[in-house]
Amino acid sequence: MSADHAATLEAFTKQNKISYPLLSDFRRAMLPGYDALVTDEKSPIFRYAKRAYYVIDKNGVVRYMKVMDNPLDLLDPAEVLKALKDVGA
Amino acid sequence: MRRVTPLLVAALLLTGLVSAGSVWTGPATALEVGQKAPDFTLPGPGGKPVKLSDLTAKGPVVVFTFIQAFTNT
Image (cartoon, rainbow over all chains, first blue to last red; front, side, top):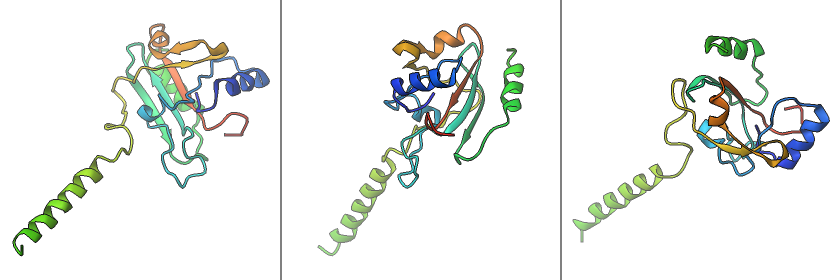
C-alpha cells in the first residue's frame, strides 16, 4: 500500500514480480486513519505514506502496529512474523 | 467602553483558542492496538477494488504501507 497511482503500482509489481497485491491510496482515503500519512509540510515526503506495519485479525481488530515516523527506520521482519503467529496465522 | 474592552479582548482570545483547536491535525483518535481497523476499499492489481474486511474475513491480514514505488523506500 502506498500513495502512488494505481498504474505506478501495477508497473512496480510487474517489474519486481511482487506476488502480493499492492493497493493504491492515491486519494489519501485510508492513510490518515492509520496515522500513516506524512502531514509535516517541511518533510521531503509530505503527503506520502509513512512506512508502517499492521496486523489485523479476522474480526478486523488491530493486533499489532508499528508506524515509523523516520522513513529511514526499518522493521525486523521477525517482529511482524511473531505478531502474525500470536494471532494464530 | 473601558469595561467593554477587556471583555472583548477575552472573547476574541477565546474564539481564537477554540478555532485553533478545531484546526484539522489528523484523525481525532489515533489508531491503537485493540481497536477496530478502519475498513477501506482501494484499487489493487488490474484496478480491481480490494476491501480490507473481505480479506480479514478469510484470516489475519498484514497491511504494510511504504513511501514510494520505484525508490528504495
